[in-house]
Image 1 (tube, rainbow, N blue to C red):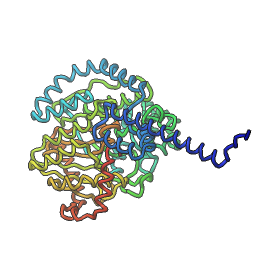
Image 2 (cartoon, rainbow, N blue to C red):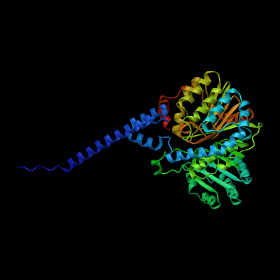
Image 3 (cartoon, one colour):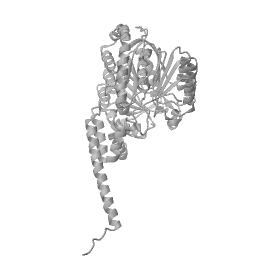
Image 4 (tube, helix red, strand yellow):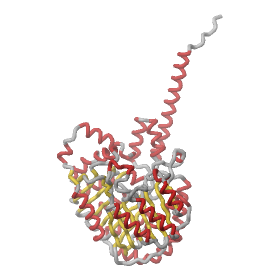
Length: 498
């Protein structure tokens, strides 16, 4: 009887390879199917974002699935969410006395506001629990060196504490003197706390200057520490994008400046960066304090809520409101604030932003405003540090131009200022960009201004940008090549996941 012939090595290799490929294919299909179910059942996921993720998973299953689980879910660790809830409960107890003491002034501030802006203020208060307060002096700083000089002056004059929260901190020629002022303050017994984003300030994490700050007694902490192991438990690109400083709970800074020179080396090819920051002296600084205290607690569990204390509130001065947004707040908070602002406009809207990848409600609010006769002007930088974002932005231009929106390209550097003015009466200065990242996953902080003088001063800054900008003409834009349209519109389809 003939003995069975053993399979040839080449045949065995082919069979094994085929079997492995079939297993990998089936595994990829299963993972893609389960990921698609997760996308469709994520209650925080918007329809446009879900559609883009499903499309990406269908076209590139392995890449799409990996990208979604690493950077697609706007979620924090369960422990962090519980910490946020506990801290807000602690702050609510602490703030009960504060609320009673200033309730009268808040009511008076609301009574002095037009009916439309009262609705905006109520919405913003519902989002982060911070009401509008009067009695603030608001000053704008646009030059980075001027801003650093004022920071140094205020830090050197601090009596109790200095709190700094920055997305990007770099020990360069502009920021180093500010950090030296923080060191001086710590050495004379002032409590100095510096919170910086782990990804945005990655070079600073192991810098010599950070060690100098620690050695001097400054508390230096990373916000949302990132790493490959942590990516298993939380979204790695969920960042703290806020930029703010609080001195003694009476002086606050909020805007788009990072703690870095205007030509900071991380993105020197796009220098110089053009920013704007508001310096607030008054009770609104104490509202910024509450935002910092929450973020500090989230990273350290250090109870510093006693620093959120009653301050003297006056009916004189500007009425402003701090608004904190992010993945721990109500979903869609930032676009709700922006679209409500846009709906208030009767005559004019001017917006400046470095990144324009809006959600559909924001896009339709801009179009509707232009079509009902409001002069709408959107100012964007000519050159962007993200080419994909620039292409995605361009996919929206034709619809905006057809509606009558004026598109302006800023020629004087990387315009990074994020501002909105409405009819010279309502203003918004924010750390948030007009894109889905700021809308859905970043921690951001904004300042609403219900004051004509403060808004007009902000509008003057916008006018300086317009003086250095050139319009995008509708007829010229319509003559783009088919290839340019194809590329920008293709990237635009993926805009919800950028």
